[in-house]
Image (cartoon, rainbow, N blue to C red):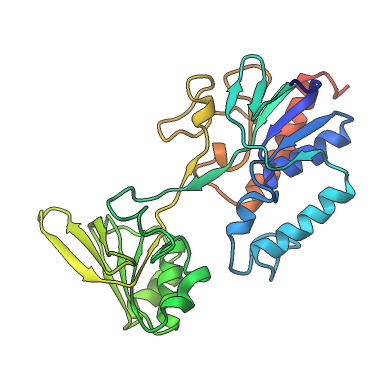
Length: 308
């Protein structure tokens, strides 16, 4: 089954895609957002702490801010098709397949964002939801007073370690290098907290447990030694990776898989644009996602000859 061609086909209903659609509408262009999940908003739904760096979001967590954004999207009558995971993309023809449906745009915007990176070690998938977790904000109360491990070296990892310590957990913070990328104030607090033990230059090798997490084995870099620590939970906070597998080999990507773009979001394929976290490894943020969404919409309008 084939849908009518739209001026702008947008893959992803997060902050980038929604902002782009709003601007495209202002330029008098038709659009369609294909959103994989039933609820648009993208990674806003992953932010469980109050947002302190974006206007209108101040004091709200991600889901609350997403609700506000979606209310505005409804008032603007943006065209969003939810529950539509894309299974095939042709950048050359700007055609997308989702289930049995086929969609085509005169332009195509890749606003697919990021997905969580996992360790991919033995025991991780088996014990997912039974001690292996993606967020202490969601699960720390379940493990209050118990030993836990947090894996990662960024702000999210150190924040999770602090959150777990607040509920009486003995925390092991494991990071693969000695250099942390976390906010300096968070890291200073973690280093002073007697409940948090920081182990740098170490990589998790295996998560053990029959029905739930019981132990984590890790290897200290340079020594070749494998050690183990008891843990009732493992919070994996090792960052994100771009959702670009469907366009690999079709548009230019960097080594890490992020889309290469010129100013305004133009990719290596005429009429195909990218915006937001999927092409911004250095600046993943709500502000950047919204700004790039607007900029790409303007470039798409120019490509279609709608800027006068």
